[in-house]
Length: 200
Image (cartoon, rainbow, N blue to C red; front, side, top):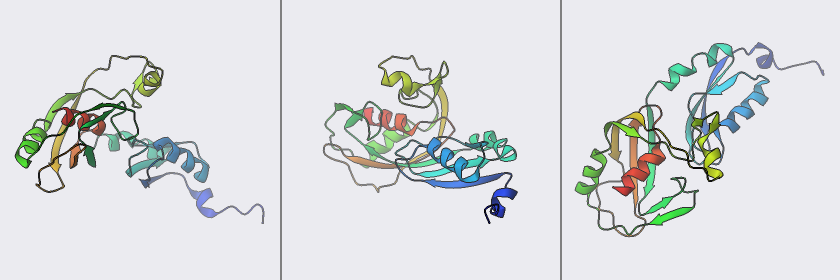
């Protein structure tokens, strides 16, 4: 009985997995676990989700599947997010050290819509310091953690849709929250978009 191996292990050559990534798990952590389960090294994902983010992670396993990862990468992405207005952190998310606090005045729906409208369409976006984007072979967060300033080049992104999803009530008070839905091109950082909207 020791030499009995499940058939789906011995017959598996390639496949595409749609993983609902939970919070506090890195995208590479999902890859590492799937490699162990499948017993194969050729496993990769089509785009990275931040550790705190949840949602669809497309994982390709096997040579035939990993070859088409670039095709998945070219597609549009859709995100829903909650923006905490009046607070800025070093990482542009809830896990970073707070670097600034700004009182939030009354924000009516008309003013919010005007603000969101400025971020629709084609634009240049500077990636966050804490990101997996590579600089000289190392991710940007490697330099950020060491306190090394890196000049980050702005990248062209397209935001096709940017809408408010929490109704049309006005926002008021410190740390007001704004819920949004975004449809955008690859390479768009929602954390950066959130920080830019907050500054506006």
